[in-house]
Every structure is written in C-alpha cells, then in structure tokens.
Image 1 (tube, rainbow, N blue to C red):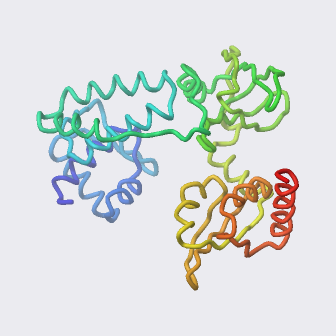
Image 2: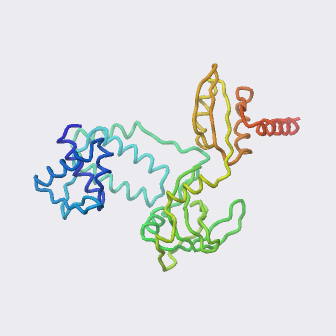
Length: 313
C-alpha cells in the first residue's frame, strides 16, 4: 500500500471508533509506531482536526469524510456479507443490513454496481439442515440490551422438554456456534453465567433496570474461562485420505485442533466435550477411520457397533 492510500485508510479507520490507539493503526497497516505518528502529523498538516489524549489514542473532532470509493474486493465483500446475514441473522438484523447496503450502493460508480449485480446472482449460502433459523426480531433487541447494559426478563423453553422457565438476566454477549445463536448472560436466579439458545427464548422484555459492566465478565473473559474449565477429552483419529475430505466439512463442530499426514493416513486431533457424540459421528466412516487415542473411545466404539448389530439383526 502506498503512502497516499495508507493516509486515506487511516483517516477512514479513525472514523470507525470514538478513540483509536496508535498501536491499533500500526498493527492493521503493518507499520511502526514512528510511521503512525508521522502519518497522523501529515493528516493534521492537511487540515484534518485530529485530537490526541496521552495514553489513550487519537480521535476526530467534528470531522467526517464519507468513504465513497470502493475497490472491487471491498464491494464483493459486501455481497458476501449480505448472503451470510440473510442465512445467519434474523429479520431485525437483515432489515438494517439491507438498508445500509442500499445506501452504500447509491454512492458506487456504475462499474462497481454492475460488478455487485453480477456477483449477487453467482453467490449463495446454504445453511446446513441441522442449523436452526434465527428468531425474527430478536437479535437487534439483544444487541441493544448488551450495549445498553439493560437487564432482561425472558421466558425460556427448557431443553428436551415442553416446560418453560422465567429468568432475569444481565446480557454480556452473543455467540454463534453449533448452528445457533446463543445469548451469554448472568442469571439472577442461578447467580452464575448461563448460555441461552436464542431460538428457545419464547418471550423477551426489558426488566426496567440496568447493570454495571465492572460487576460482570466480558464475553472474551467468559469464553476463556469456559475453555479453561470445560471437561475436554483429547482425541486423535486417522483416516483414509479419500474419506478425510468429508470429515473436514464437519470437524469444527467436534473441537478440531490440527491435522497432519503421515504414512498415507490423515491424522486429526480434537478436544471434544462429548465423547459419545464424537463416537457416533465416527460410525459413518466405517473401516476407513481408526481411533489412535484414547483407548477408552475404541472400547466405546465397539459398544456402539455391537448395539447397532443387535438392533438390525
């Protein structure tokens, strides 16, 4: 990236946040802090009102430059985003994204608009059948509650049951995994953090009060704590290379860590929370898969195989 393009990109980056740290700019553009200071000084000399607070970062003072020029790669990324939002976000998020995308398209050059229109018809995202569709008009409400630190009252369907439970929770974040959106929140009833699948939330309302963030874990801290305390089993399997390509499509749902190839076999390493679910997944690969470790999983696979034989006989 030449210096002129970098200065423009830095200016746009400064508009994305209230305060931007120098180290953040250095990391994004792969430059030294000294270069960051020099570039910011150049922008100031060009008349851009950049404020600075020692130990905090840079900020713009009542200045806005619309980023109306997009490269084909940037325009293409918008189409990719639209396809993903359509499949993995609910109606509240999709409506907002579509509105923003129309505004962006309105300032694109003719060639860029044609590029987007042609690409749009040639991209699609198919959500796996196991995935649950996002609950309409829920994600925006949850996002607003997280940012506004608003306590929520929710009616939640108990897993594997028709029963419902009512909770007051302090929402700290949203996570998408296992084909569903999950609300991570501090539960007032349990006095601990809980994971609520959003498609099981039957009713949602503001409780009329707020909570202080310093009394709650951040989402990143919660996820790190979960990783450190979860009961995980390390598993190594080996596969015939022809079958490994099929396993690669689903392995991230089972705690995949790394892969290596030795002696014409593909070795995959996992950290899994559910050894039973993991073994049932392996059954579909028949004699093309071997469990390298631990031995206990081999024994359980034999149990599952005998169970299947007894059933079908």
